[in-house]
Length: 240
Image (tube, rainbow, N blue to C red; front, side, top):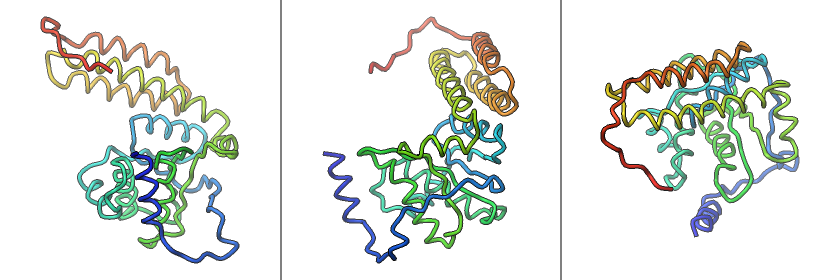
């Protein structure tokens, strides 16, 4: 039912616009390494993807976690019926585009996409429309589609981009699981978060400069293992 409602909302909110014959194709921009690639925050994995791009000569910047301004801008430029991540990524993009140091001629936004019933596949289309509306039609959006061009798109980001990014994603996934196991029992609030953030930065550095990511993972496990904990009281667990 949710997917059906999303589809009906998409039809209802579609813009009525006449297109010239030659412009009916979706605008797909080629990668220009002279531009800075901005990646909206969706998880700490975006820092790993940015590091993998930099390792392959792409000037990539992962935007920080969304804040109150991101949320306000996201709500301003969306209808209110979109899912929360769509609102936040929109807010992050608009916030960056409105920064005084933002250079439209040397910038590009990254947004992955996917097929299927989820609206995630339409994020980049909505972002394109919003950038056009705020006067930035010349700022590209670089997408990674799961269609026929996926291999080509990822290869443009570097021969080992996928491998480096995947290693980074796995690192973040396991580190977060370990963090969530230990943090409820830490004696001093915030100790685990400090260790976690330190090793996220070390992992970025390792991916970008070709260092040993496995060693960073081992160091992170040992560092979290040294955090003082109190396991005398069992904490409730979420059953999935």
